[in-house]
Length: 104
Image (cartoon, rainbow, N blue to C red; front, side):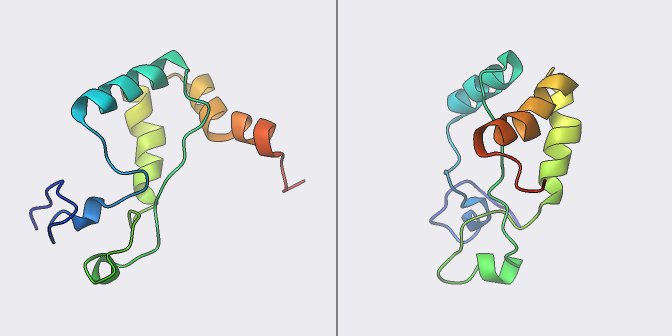
């Protein structure tokens, strides 16, 4: 399939996420903020929807793969210069600091 970024099209619906994807300029600024540690935490809009559910009315929001988050954290972030300490802060420490650790 040729997925484009037009959410209204059948081929672009895979990319319907909350918040919605932004412009290239916004994405570049967000990456800059990630590298500078100006992002408190990162999370996903992954969802356990099958491709059939994503491509059928009501075209559910979210991306059906938690594996992409692992790639984002373990592969992409280090590749763009985000160090391990900052990754841990954005994926765990700041979240626990804000909401507490309910697992204790």
